[in-house]
Image (cartoon, rainbow, N blue to C red; front, side, top):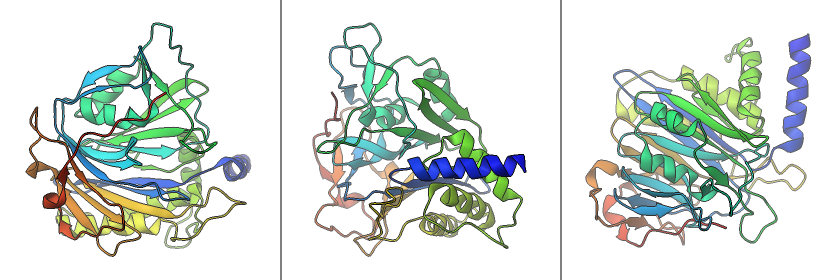
Length: 346
């Protein structure tokens, strides 16, 4: 009874505080088959494009004189938002990074005249893709908070950007990074294969433990809310076929992330936690293939990262998805040379 009461309270708080919605799930099949999928749910169009970045790109944290400086060690394919932020991607070592909304986030205070370097939140995921091959490497490097993640308002809105970051690697390891009350909290375990939005990840695990006592073949929560999506994703990712056949595995993972999506056109002023799914990605970390589909085009297409020139000095390439551009199948040849976008800073 005590646990059930805690569960009800957690759900109530989650309903009151949740905002824009997304889901992320990791599939682990035999013979090194690791696949990470995510949905991007947002009330309005976020003008996504796909980018391929080679090694050797010099970047900075875009927060002024104390901006973190780095040069990309690994090439990557990423999804951008408004061409000002990396929100999702896969690097050439099989590391995947996804940022999802977390309204409970509270970041450390950044002093532009202090001593600690900073990085804009719009480049947080890209920094991880540029610098790390495995989850363990990233956790080791970031656990002591070597820089400050600096957030700001989404341009043209009164919405302050509050995100958490999930990463998975080609060996099936997982980690979740959240800033709660100004402190970095890292959840690192291969079993952490599902993440949604609110509540904080620790409470998501508690909610899921409750539902584990109810067989998924008997009942699963079916609403669009984050807690329900977490439970459905957790159940279905374990229920689909465990196979190393790439076609079957990718199709199965797509079916899970679609099940956790919000129908297009649904939104609610009274319940901002309900937002339409805009696009979905599925990253095959074994074969380094990045699959993508948007709700306003009829086809799923994919990008084979191994077939791009990712050497130092190679060109940055972009796939423009604006104006309902439609692609089908392997789409490497549709990418065009472009200057890397600039991350939104302060």
